[in-house]
Length: 139
Image 1 (cartoon, rainbow, N blue to C red):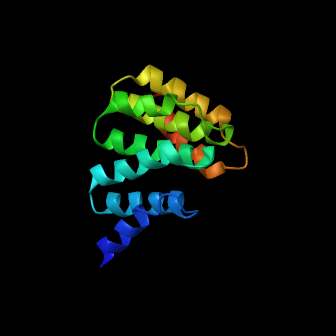
Image 2: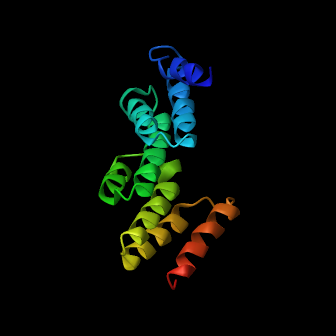
C-alpha cells in the first residue's frame, strides 16, 4: 500500500503537485535505502521543476546521496550548477564535506570559509555547524 502511494506521488508529473511529490517520493525511497529510485526522482525534479528553488534543493539532495555513495566527482558536478543566492552557503558546505571525503583538506577549508561568508548572520546554528567542520580541519 505504501509503495503504491509513493508510486502515485512519483507519477504526478505535469500536475502542480508533481515537483513536491517527486521530492517526497525521493525522500521515501531514500529512507528505504532505494537510492536508485531516490536519485531518479531528484533527477526528474532537476530536469523538469518549474522553479529554480526546487531544482536547487534537488541538486543538494542528489549531491548528498552521491557523497554517501562515494561518487565524489559526480557530487561536486551537481554543486557546480548555477544556483540561487540563498543556497550558496549550503552548496559551499556540502562541497567542503565532499572535499573532506576526497582527502582534500585545504580545498575543504576554503569551501567552509566561503560557506561562513555566505551564511546569513541570523542563522547562528548553521554557522556554528560550519565553524565546527572548519575547526576540525584546523581552521
